[in-house]
Image (cartoon, rainbow, N blue to C red; front, side, top):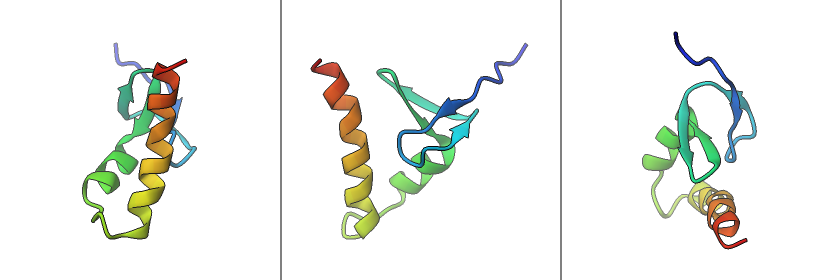
Length: 61
């Protein structure tokens, strides 16, 4: 039986079924793919870093 639970992505804010969970934060498959292919010079790269900081902030609480 497949798990069809939707989780809210910390990057885009949408509920999705497919993706990864890091610590307790979910990143959807679409955002994960976009992050991997985004150049460090791209403005979106800094947005991704900002959103990912939510993960490190939770591990220090």
